[in-house]
Image: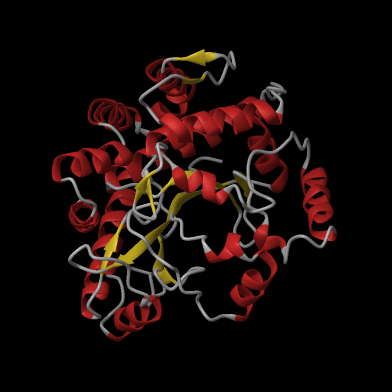
Length: 372
């Protein structure tokens, strides 16, 4: 595959413009966008770039497939601004926050499938108001995709540490950099996976989960990384939605490079790391707990190591792929900024500590989402 296209899905919160709370207006935002020209991207359709989510206080935005990092960056910024304009048209705003900092009681989007989920999963569905960043990367075949899934497993936790953007939950500081990850793990099929070995074994594993009757359908396969049901891509789902669009671009660039690196290793006959799934779960928990501020689990040694060393190991691992796509310099600069200034969780806490109250955290997030 000469050029792997990639794209992102970002879930945003719909909030009061003054930072006072959330607004259950996703249908109205999409309708406004449709009636006022949609998103100014060729091929985007009339508001087809926006979708509803489980709760009415959420809006999902999707880029088109992109070949270059510059193209992806432009689309993320353009779509975020279009979402901000559409939300403003119905008296709301959008905020790239992975959990809601203030107390909220979400309202279910009234679709048949979401009602079934609410009935089946009770409080897990009732409280599931989290926003992630999902990165899709093109693959040449299902077998290549599964080979990639098997080989990227230990490299996913650093992506959560870099993107962590959910320290607050129901008006309280959770002590976690990514509380979204803790809430998300309540779904029965979420988390890291074992080695699959082939597309046939992947499909068999998915079917076995569905046949337990615990999941409604294949759409509820919430692995950290999975084969897309509708596109010739794999989907990496571990990142919080990022406060800054530049961090979204960084995560997407690293994910594409991870996929390309893994596919290259597969073609060369290099076996995947057989690290146990329980160790991967611990590594992801550690990344969500402390982000970049304490030690993480090293993707190669699987021992505790400084976060800076883990991020450096990730960069070294994917440098050939980044260089091949012309992304190395941009990623190096973006990584340097995150390591210096911190992730979204650090910014949220800094504002809260300075202002002594949560509404300024949400007001800042509205500004960051629309302008950065």
